Image (cartoon, rainbow, N blue to C red; front, side, top):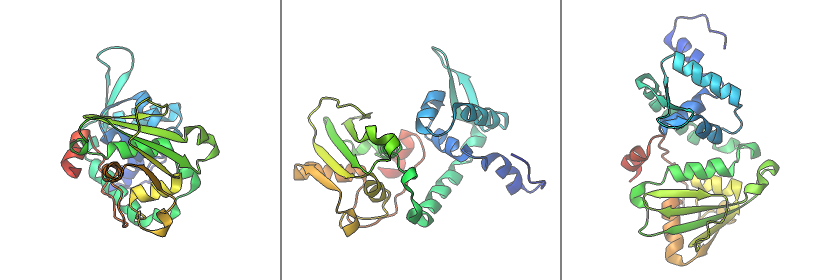
Length: 241
């Protein structure tokens, strides 16, 4: 990226931070150290070559550390103290986006895999029910390239939440059927379940189990600004528990 030709700290920071995809790479690393393939799964539209280049650039600027895995091939990527200083910036971008970009979601912005990975990351472990709890998601209106990923499962068994694309074989406690866009808007807090816009979201299960699923997923009857936490499981627990 060409420089701005100014010594201003804002300009110098933007020469690094404002590169395409860099804020999203930092967003993912805010959630904890990751392997290269972990980042690829979370940023599927970013090419392998570009991801490698961005990670090298961030390492050269002292924002990301790269170390070999203790066992097996590959590296672990993590934020340095300088990288950690970007965390409040990522949080601020998230908050601004929730307030001012909610009306410009496009079909190409909708991805069930990214949605459910995000949902899973925002459920504090302290909220996990005792015993196994299984939620099945059935999405409509999925873009053609992702139509094979219409059905997903959460298997919640403290302290882990497993996200499955194939039927895990457990009895389902709650099934949620919805268009991908409507569920995304409801989870983000842009619409409430009691509103007309959310009527296409259908819950199937025992009433108590349905209420538990809504609480776990942070779904509310009225619109509510969602406080997203980009951090480790411990940070999510501390902020959202």
